Image (cartoon, rainbow, N blue to C red; front, side, top):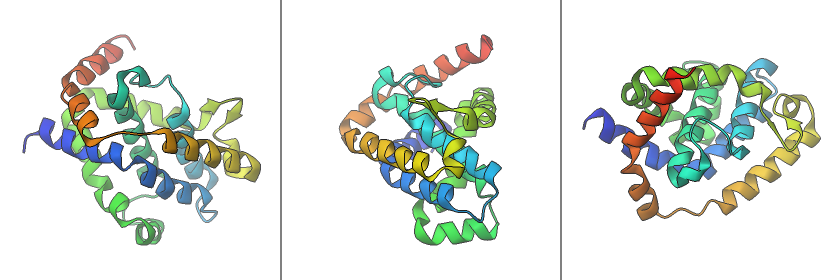
Length: 188
């Protein structure tokens, strides 16, 4: 399969699996054995799912979730590095997410090419993400903020009603996504 087809297949699955993947990443945020700076990354990616203004506007429908799926994977990969005991521990609870993670990211890098740097740059700013006056980095140390975040995510994932057909129709416009990202990269 070519890079485009592989990207479409993997990221359509990632969007459909988003509610389950959010649970996998929430466990990383709850993992007090991880250093706070790594947990801040996943907190930022989780808050980012709630924000309308990201790399791909949510007004693009299901296609607007591609950047959220990628950001979630990048943050998880950075917080729980491959080959670490933490990765092994988390992979026992959510094997599909952790098993597919390296290939999902490799496919995104291959298809998006030089525009993937936009996602990598965004990764460093994730801990500063804010939603409804609450900052992502606060969720690491404040259980009340973390509980609020989980409630917001639960509602957002419940409201996320996608059919396979809607998603596959949207993914036909994947080249427009790459064009959009190239414009963003040019205006950086």
